[in-house]
Length: 323
Image (cartoon, one colour):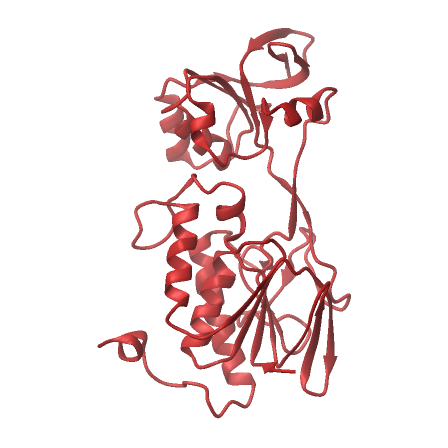
């Protein structure tokens, strides 16, 4: 059985970049992803949504980001295993034994880039929700903006994602209604100003009290006042419930369910590291750009912690890949 220098759990953007950087440092890499394709949330949940927080890229769609990361990975050797959910990680003399539902791996170190864990959307928990979802008139994320063209759409939520989707839907839908249960939005101030200056109709503070044949019944928060909103499609954007992989009971986690790490991305379990949205520490900022930096810190710490004659300890990417 091959003993990898590092096994990366999670094939989202941070995991893909960690695999590239590890390969660039000369480490042997196994990347294990539970879904059938890599790319994480940007690829699997909202491939057409634009991402703005990556240095040097004014904007990029989630699907295009995955393509770019995979093209970057072509520069280094690595092994990728998709459709394999990690079952257990155990310490042994050679490092770690990592088992999935169909395979077993050996690695000297483990880097957790599982994001927020296995995700399930927060639902309305209202009668008729499942049937509307099955019929396609209610959804929790968007894979194809064109399916909303010419429709009247209600977006439910008040965070960055809900407002971003509302702005994108404005370009294809006939009407966009943004419904939030609080008077103020939790999104970035610039995004809020863009929404207020748009044609998006705001409904605050309202909550959904029922699903109707033609749309939604809305109720003013802390009031008996109700109104009907006629729409063709409903996008529920209340975020996601996390179900972190319970791989090692000894790992310290924060109250939010994220893995606690130090400034080198080390967990309390020697040889196991974490980076990206699944990692937590004082001052943590949950951005992709931050996650990419955490991946570099973790791989550097791994390189320095294990005995590797083949590791590349000096040099920059320009000298490694430049012609």
